[in-house]
Image (cartoon, rainbow, N blue to C red):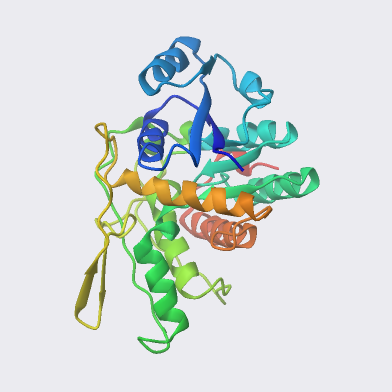
Length: 298
């Protein structure tokens, strides 16, 4: 197999960081061949900046590009479902940014579509692919720290002025943007075990969204076990990043390539069942907090 040929769906900030992260990987393993945006001029600007051969002014054109092996979907949350289904129906493998869907029903719809078409689909929970996370899973399997009976995770950022995190029509709210990191972390530590019950509490912003408490575990570069610290530094980015530590997106890209080399249709690290579990918990949390989206309507 030659380089994995990436198509990029969206010319936004996270796509920028993903492209910078890909540049830290060997060019013989990863190559970006096309980018699409709803505005052709934005796609062309990104194509020129990152030396991408093709730029499209619609996602449909990207879906029909025969040179694309896998599509990275970096659109805002409410558009994950239609964009991902578009590429799946075109027979493309997909790495979709988290949250995979606005709710568990959307996640199940995408998983079913991917299975029917026989293509690879993974939710881009980049945290799981950092070397620190791999080391942690190894320590948990070895019972180095004994049996885990409680996990405490918190994560918060000052995002109140960012429209996509406050406006309901954009999928706003702390839970789907950053709170899900805490949920997926607990699910990873407990090896996908479904909780017997979920009890949620929170504060709602005046737009009806919930918020969290500051932390930075979501892009881990240090692991401390029994007082001993281990550092796993990231490669230096070639360009300025919009978000901290996002050269770490390289690890999920590497993982996708390895999965496709093995002919896998889902990741053993972030499986379809993992995504469905995380989103079922998020649905229950939102139900208890009284947070709903248009996508929740039958």
